[in-house]
Length: 567
DNA sequence: GCCGTTTTCGGCCCGACTGTTTTCAGTCG
Image (cartoon, rainbow, N blue to C red; front, side, top):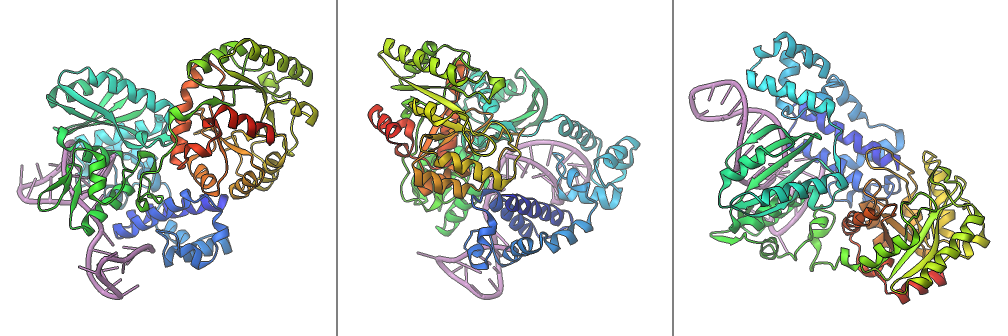
């Protein structure tokens, strides 16, 4: 959906320019919000090209609707282009340097002649900056550090990198004298696919000791903030970690606050104000304290059910009247996507089965690659037949679990599958996935994936877009049409839990769930330890509001087998 | 620029910390 992405960029840039030119912060916020709406939209904005549909979206008013329509009509937004002419383009990069906000960048530009990061660096070296207001030695040193940090940083960390790191930090802090409760919060707790920084919340009888331990942790390369209640450090891999210490009595309010999202918090505060109450990280108060110890208490006092962290994105969760029974890790009873040494996996069929048994699964499907995935040692049709025999033999040998014979079949660029129907018909489960030609245009991708979804022998569409987080965009099919076909044909859409993939992504899952499509949450096992990545898939599923009954991996053995046979 | 269980005009979340100043502006989350 290129139009959505373009409009997101346009509104984001408009917000940035307006900040620099000193427009009202509320106007800036409005554009930033419009950008976010564009990124959250699961349908092509071109389908909403009339004023009425656009105005129905929260955060889109008259002005934004006009600009969207103008973009769809002409391919550009006039006011956006006019705004860009008002500032040197490189200034937008300067604004991204931590510690430099709109006020400072404006002064650098207007009074210091800074137009981009390069000219800022030159001014730092020549000492020009010292002449500007509020530019002391410390500030200049910090700017220098921040420029180096931005240059070396890889940007946002993947959930699969940040979560294990956060768990190690929590473990480290729990061992510090006086610590009573340590928990990570922020976008990590919400299960976002990438993480800007790690937020840790703590209660302790000895705050000073905890802060010092935190600032001296292994891997800390710079202490950014060292306050009474807040510490902030930069770690070696280029990730920032914030520690906040609170009283146990307000742990819930603080956890709520530091889990965010910011938009969710703002909405809660506005709700509090309407109820003549006041919400901050210390609690919900009226004439006297109302709630603070637990998140559930605060929500209840605001007339809301407990809202799971993954839903806190202002995507409709504030209209809930009860907590939805979202899927949980423990609901998963079957893994339907796993590789063995026959293709590019590291385990034998039996080793794979033992891992699955250890996790309490009733079923594991062996789904090795098809021939077109040459680099993954995909199985030729003949090898597939032999492999099926080996799987059946293992199934007979190991009674504690059902081992299904399957394959992960390549969906070729034109939509044809990599095995003929005779071979596919011999399999218990067929995952069809795109692995090559991942740069084809949106129409070709839609046609290709629709062909697989409609194929009567395909059970699951595997990692539908083929994207890799932070490194490959993947296909950009018309998701709405894929979902429609998936519902019509009873084909499941996969959430590939591999933390580099998370494909479908959260917003796609949400759209699929609302349309009533079946979802498969699979780990795409290649090594024993991959089973542990399931949690990332579950977080993504929860962010998509998935309930267990809509996920085929939660079904009883009987129901699952029935579905597989009757497809 | 958006929005309405006070409002179609007049609001729009709140607190910690830093650095440069002497009482607070700017940034961040």
